[in-house]
Image (cartoon, helix red, strand yellow):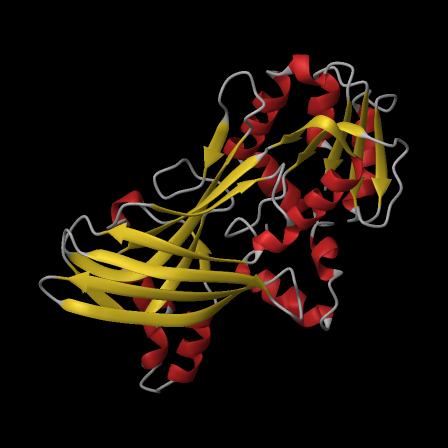
Length: 340
């Protein structure tokens, strides 16, 4: 996945056209980062190879196959036919990778957008895809998985993974906030607060230490990929957090988990501050000003998320937080953010 700086540059170069998304996945560096993400890759490998009884003799569709790694796991698990779809130019390297590893008789790769291609089969038994983005839904690749589900998945077919949950928590983050947000208040004695506003609007994707977390977790969204509809992915949901120690609230943090429930034994992973590192890290929404909190205080609120009208791969987020405290009373925070 790209850094926030790279994404901004790609936006600028794209002149509003969505092709930057596929262009960015043509670079080998992005695939190197994902392949080296042990949590991600090992979980998918186990979910496939430990369920050979589900894959043996079946037709499998891999959406956004990249280098073909999941295709090859599926072929290794005994799939009769594996179809990988990839729109980025990494497709050409993936074809050679498939050939070099002796899977060209089992794996067929197709270059193009899932919504525009024609498959060599009418139905598939299993859909596999690593569709998750920052904040779970960034880049809207799940939309494509749902399109494929409705068009090609056979009755009773399986989706890997098939469950996802999005969570929130509150963190203390004085040091990093000072360097990334409040820095703009005094830059070599000059007031550049106008840039601080820009920094606040765009959430930061980074890792948070578990010791920074000052609340419990609140589940914001739960997705069943067998039944969810595209329109459900624009959502408004309430949350409730209980503060666990006296501190300052500097940001609300979002992270997600996924599950492969068709597996004969439970398997999945989470991307929270207390979990093992993944390339998704966490998504940090800084609030305008720190909020003082005590153990037992509550943070309630509502988060609304919808696709950006100009670029539906971006997300517009509206976050409202209300602190209720016996010691400090009530305090509100409200801000609109854009994940891009």
